[in-house]
Image 1 (tube, rainbow, N blue to C red):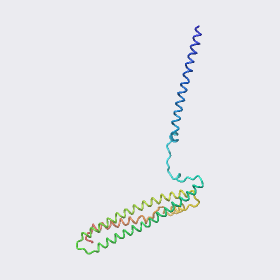
Image 2 (image 1 turned 45 degrees about the horizontal axis):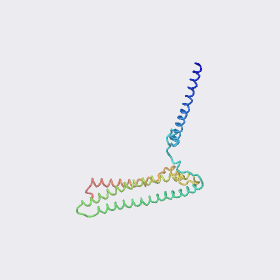
Image 3 (image 1 turned 60 degrees about the vertical axis):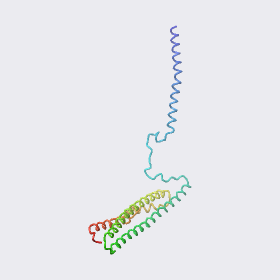
Image 4 (image 1 turned 90 degrees about the vertical axis):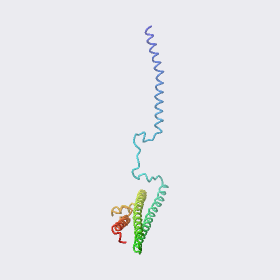
Length: 216
């Protein structure tokens, strides 16, 4: 009788464990499905635990898949090359404008200096105004040249990146020759120094006016 009770008790205990087991399995499977659904919407670099790489160079600037994109690349290369040439032409015209303007200022200073005025105060005032005006214009000229040089360098880098997928590497070869001759900058040293020379001239002129006010 006692053995029958033991067997009955063990059977009941097994039945209870069997009833609880599916619940545990179901709860674990539900958590697994929830975790999988959550990670599925995350980016790959988050799931891998690695930071997202940033573009440190222009390797992804050009991406070709078929012949149509190669034709489009050639057209974009032509447009960008024309823009580079246009910027260079505008730079030359702008330099001529700045030189002419500074020449007019110096001519105005010389004209006012030779004027016969009994009261020298208005003459000094006009000359100082022209000197300061020319000085700040020369600074603006120098800053404008720097911006143009940066723009040309960026466009040249884009053109050379495109030339990696083209048979003739015109800009790349030209750049390599400039590097060998130590003239790789988009602007010549003389072109960069002209505004600084004008600034220096205006500073010297202002110092002369301070030290020798009766020179006029």
